[in-house]
Amino acid sequence: MTGSQTIFLISAGCIFGGAVFGLLLSRRLPEAHLRDNSRDTVKVVTGLIATLAALVLGLLISSAKNTFDAVDAAVTNSGAKVILLDRALANYGPETKEIRQHLWSTVVAGIEMFWPGEKAEGVGLVGFERTNAMEDLQAKIRALTPATDLQRQLRSEAEKLSGELLETRWLLIAQAQRELPTTFIVVLLFWLTMLHISFGLLATRNATVITVLLISALSVSGAMFIILEMDHPLSGMIKVSSAPLRKALEHLGK
Image (tube, rainbow, N blue to C red; front, side):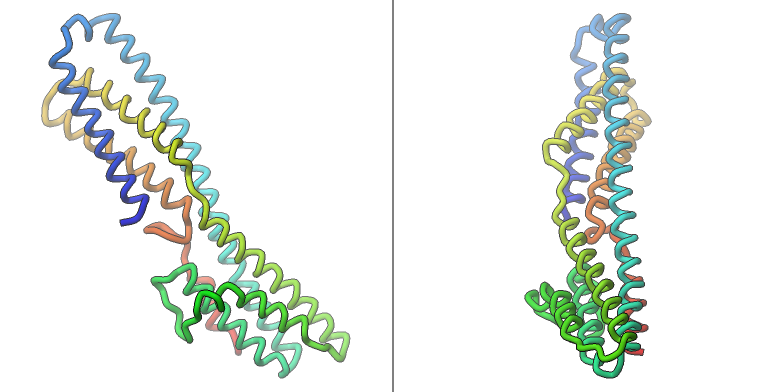
């Protein structure tokens, strides 16, 4: 079970548990505590907490979506740059055949690294080889000795493209290390739990109310799940597709 799934279950349990606690607490409190001014105060505080929680959830979802879109665009651009790099090497001459094969192996290794459940066809590479594949590719390109102006131009283009691919690779690796602060999640969960306790305090105890409170708990927990999933676009249930790189593999070496 992934961390986002665990947090979804914990948050759903805490939030719905808070709602049930509010329902039970309303039976034990003196009747005067839930009348007139007391009830109005609870509603005002509830509205304040609901506003805070809604703003934070909205901002987090927007931030997670931007992160997901940025990684998706990076993967798509990488697929296009891989094809352009292969074409530049092909136009350079037959002496780049080994480098083009190395490029193919590098793309395969990248797919296996970032999408381990989607093994690409080809030889499996150990972690060390995966880590240094792009650097080795750059070294091979720089070792080329162009004899014409066209070859010098093509080598320069190949160096530029390989550098951009290497930069994207490290950006993706750095992105995979991001973590939403635990304190942030705890505070947000506290707000949502308190909010549902107040819902329970003011609600009538019947099956319909309990069902609605359960749906509410699952809904806000689902929002937290989406945030955590989209904040890590290369892992989990919601992740960036490897299709652009797989499509690039189909065009390499041709």
